[in-house]
Image (cartoon, rainbow, N blue to C red; front, side, top):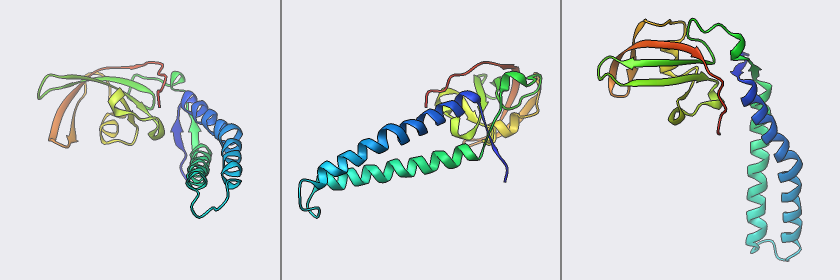
Length: 163
């Protein structure tokens, strides 16, 4: 099975979330369930059912995070060459059809946030950019059709993800 690339920062953020769920949220929800259970009839106990739903959500997230982390390969993009677009590269591109500039950083899929310019290495835009260099022209299939772009700049920029 191929490992999913992830930045060190993204990996640490997910590890921190997992630790919080296991060490804080899980014990707290067990207490909430015990308190709700003590209120009597479980069939009509909305507090108990809400706590059980929250417990299910927490356990599902713990399982999801555990799987994501076990299938991740931490890559430090600062150690990679960014003369060509690769994982961790920040790319400034110009849409040749409408002269608009865009800046994207290529990250792991779990770290992506397109509204913040963080695109997954597996996205159509990133796949079109990977391996290209400054000055290259590419055509990217977007929802509104094919668009032509020129790569204006390829560089590394340390990014802190807000997910």
